[in-house]
Length: 338
Image (cartoon, rainbow, N blue to C red):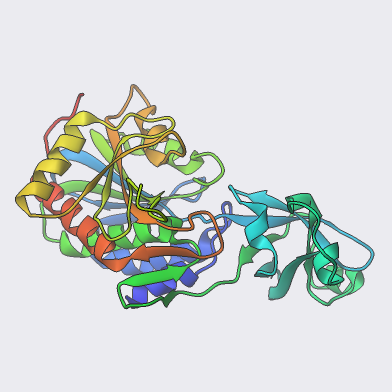
């Protein structure tokens, strides 16, 4: 639990994943044969062994913001890194990266700042960052166009110790699952690449580079997926087990891998959910299109409030995803062509 908390609280906006990568490197090093970092910042942890070359990917980056301009009063306009619903940002606190550390700021707008009534939907263009500092003070601290901002939320529990909340559940949950798998499978004689990718939120870029380099026989992206259990009409719920991707907006999950996952789940009595969606995709898409094509699918943990400042997930789902993947990797299919 402490490791998951550290990962979720760490700051790692797309394109600036160093802090997350350091935590992962220290924790996975004792459980793999070798570590390397490629030119795009992906961390590749290879556990040498026999059998098919298997790639498990989870992305390190999180959604965030970047400074677009600084006006004469010191208020900063912002641009999104990754997908945001602008209305959820109002009143949130952020940390702004500078050469001297991180400065705290509050997301506001003219109406909110002046205690005026909002007359319409808030857009990103309406929002500003207020640090209480002047333009000159900000510039002296190294704040400039292109400075990264990260959402300032902390890991916590809601009504029970099973329900966690925090920023960056997408995809620090996946990173945590890979770290736990590496620990459990340390003595297993399988050829496994644990790949922690960069810039997933802005275009699945890190996975393209790493898959081309690793050339796995097959792969699974471990990510999160939106829960839709606000009402009783739900199909994906938190607490109901890992989600196996049959189809998302851009990928049809490899049937061979999916069937193997379902067999393991039934054998070990692990609850699971099958996901068919018209929105979103994962690193599995980039991996599947690498080289001559790599059989790929995605396994996810359901998260409420995905792509907001505070997500909600179940620890039981996380633990069951670890059990499911552990079972698969102890008896993996040799090939998965369809």
